[in-house]
Length: 150
Image 1 (cartoon, rainbow, N blue to C red):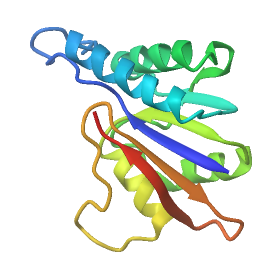
Image 2 (image 1 turned 120 degrees about the vertical axis):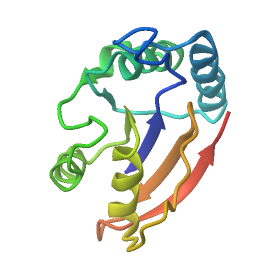
Image 3 (image 1 turned 90 degrees about the vertical axis):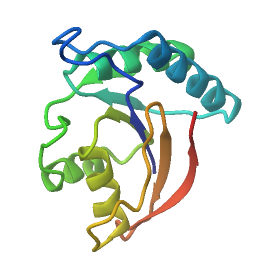
Image 4 (image 1 turned 180 degrees about the horizontal axis):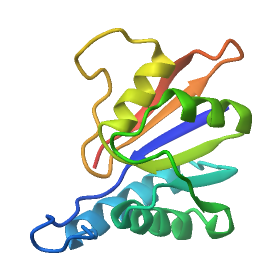
């Protein structure tokens, strides 16, 4: 099983638009990452995203480029400050290659849970549009398989 964690692209500030859609730069970041993922021949069984607009827009760009629009699904429990432990179980029960488009600090905490990190510092960096692929083993531990930064 491979788990691809993707932070949404750069979004507008809340002052500009309370829904915080992607900026032009954010859209371009996700398009570039999509091209990289296409070249890496990434295949996924599902693409989950939060209900927030910036994650949904990022997911739509990625799903179109990876030709998995029918595998796009909004999931609860993926917001920035949601607890990661309950969501970890959803991932383990899925048992197939999965891409999650979300937010900080949730993505970093989720990676830490799988990597069993016990630190107050980030062990995985997520710039806007960044992708980290974790490979989860049968004993439910993970290793960073690769990462791509725009």
